[in-house]
Length: 244
View 1 (cartoon, rainbow, N blue to C red):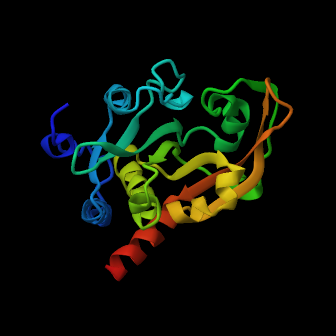
View 2 (cartoon, one colour; view 1 turned 90 degrees about the vertical axis):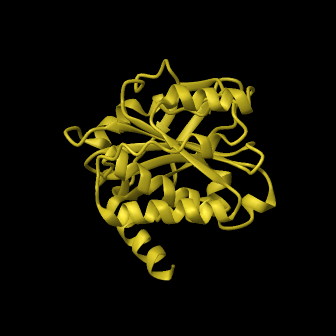
């Protein structure tokens, strides 16, 4: 991989949603992250993303929705990678369209939540449970799944603005390239209880809607389901750009 990967391979802007506010916001977040020493690459080919992760962190498993053998493999997706000045990978995230506007998201997710398990753990799918609250039940339009979120464990990144900037960048890039009407994600209850959803920019975080039962332990994995609608994102970027 070349020394300046992010700079020598600029993001391919194959946008489907041309609202100029979103173009301005995307560039704003990229510039802000660059000022923090994170150089951003955005792509739509998940095989490239998986190769980047293998090159930089070969022991890290890719979560099921973004693997080549996923039932979603043919659905459009975006990935975001951040590199430091020495070309070390310091950030990843990915988003994939999982439910088109023609399908009821609540019904779809209830039937298919087993396709979004935590990585590298034996899950008892039969006894795992999903219960959507009214806010999640109301999601409609093109719904995208947000995952693969990782930020280098360094106070330079995790202790400041990078978490919120990368989250906002994903929302904007997802709307522009995937025509997303809403985003959903899953995180452990431990992370949710520490306030990670709001730090990432999510306006909605629902605890205990999804509980994974493990085959190798009696202790369940409790989670938060987070979500963000396009109207939430419109508000978020209007505030961010106004402050800027």
